[in-house]
Length: 278
Image (cartoon, rainbow, N blue to C red):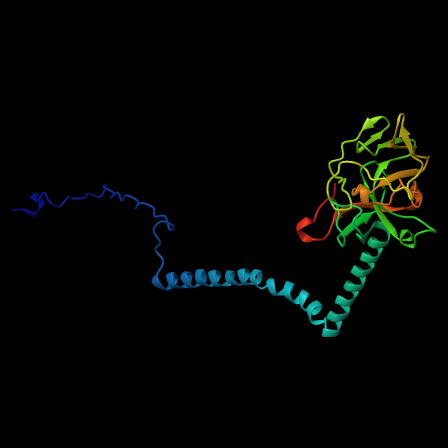
């Protein structure tokens, strides 16, 4: 066969120009064409950048000892003597506060005797205060009274306020009743007993001590006590009415409000009876 007749090889003439199609472009980011040496260099650079960022976190962690060092001198500066002086100053300050409180705010008193039975018993400790105190009926107070006849009355005395300035007091000894300004007072806290401790329900008469009393018309044995409390004074009685020297007697009589040392806030002992006193 003639070679000019072969069909599998195109014959080009002088006027024919071969057309070469451009190769498709390649994105270097998506498909890197760098050499292996370049790849290793890039990896080392990235690794170095990663390693160089770690000290930033270490700097943040290293800030904690700074605060500890700031506190260290203060702790190291306290010697055993310094600690002792510090506690001594604290003790003196507390002692000064206690002295001020018990001198001007409150005080502790002890009950002596049985005149306030059954409310208060002999030997019990009470917390007393006169801070911003204005006496009123029903309060249990501590006062100081001067007596030339009985020396024990020159010591602080504890009684219950029955009436204040201007109020009228009426006691029916036979009936065992108390009236203030014409109103009968219900007293659940008192006891009316005889010398044997038996409840008799009436007031006993102490002729040698009691103030002026009158008798019911037509019955001389029915004793009545009446009095109007002077201005600036108090009428007081013990809860153990038949075993109490109080405003019914000449040795105590009306109590000047200026002699009041304070009123009972609470009972301190015994512990099972700790609390307020009614």
